[in-house]
Length: 493
Image 1 (cartoon, rainbow, N blue to C red):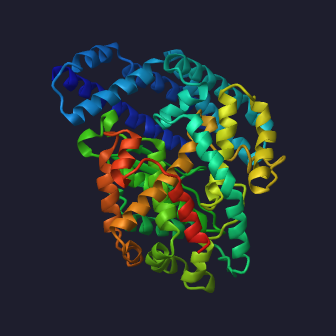
Image 2: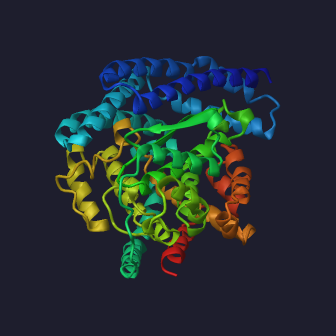
Image 3: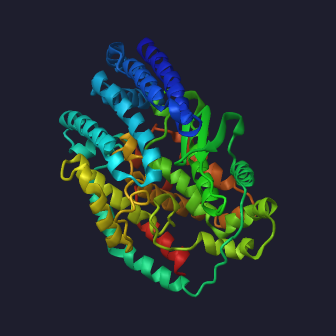
């Protein structure tokens, strides 16, 4: 097993370099002085080359061939498979393209943060055009080798094995029932009286509330922290998880759920198998599975009456008693369905519409069917079609609201709705195994839920394919019917 052991050493080094890269990115998003952006972009580009060169080391290819003939156990075979796939993905791109992308992403990200505040699409568009040009170049290279379409070659980086043909079928089905479901729920909720929390909710109090809830969910602050950024995210590495959120002094409701969402991501990372952390097989299975954990925490649990009951004392302790903060009112607030412009603040019913819109636009972009200049009008057209909302001239709440395209993350957006579907399927299984699970959650006991997730999702990392993982956990591959049933049962019954 000499070759395999040498491969482990190689990937441990890559993991250490990735650790540093992720922390630098976190700092860029949360703490870096504005005036340092250009220098940081150049430094990150250089570091990206170092990491890329380590990832495409020609000796890895030789070791992969030698290891194929060694006597490996099932975990080591799965590990070798993931190493080979990772190496193939890394070696497809020339260092010059990797460096150009790193530089373009850093610069575009900085411009996005500045120009989104200014609602200035024209100032943002040129930097995004450069990112899209380089992403198309990458897609062309990957497509030629893999035989996949340009877009599918990028989608495969986030959802291995998934194809746009399958997504088109899934999303086309969703579009046949979702608009009417939204309409029915909105009509049903018209009779509800909701008291909106008023006043100033100090940032420090919101942060302390978030920390209490994160502790309740089991986040390990000895190996992680939470900070503020323009766009909430979970970064770092399993041994050093970095969460960010954002706060609004006039509204603590959304930031609290944002924190719970990111804690779901973090829980997955912190519970990956310790002995495999430095290896590709020890990483999260896919972004859809990753997103299923954040949405399991936020949607299946977090917005439920049972979970809100368990954390209600924390909310009262943070902001005091008021009619608006009574449990029944909070349940109504977190169950409110209302078409809105901002994806990250959307309710779970309308959320899928936001994802499908972005998927259809980015697929057309990467496949060369539209250009960057077409995005605002196409966005407005699809937003009006899906949710009846107008974004014409409102770029900051429209096509400039997300950071993903600025960072070249094309093929990523479908993971959000796939994650919602996986989460519904997982929670359905938990309820079958533990019929009283909702009562346990209401009493503040998350042990059964977390144990199931740990044993069936977290500890499995990338040992199995996505289909194998979800089948072993729930008894079948992805079945969107559980997502539809969850929405109907929660909001219409």
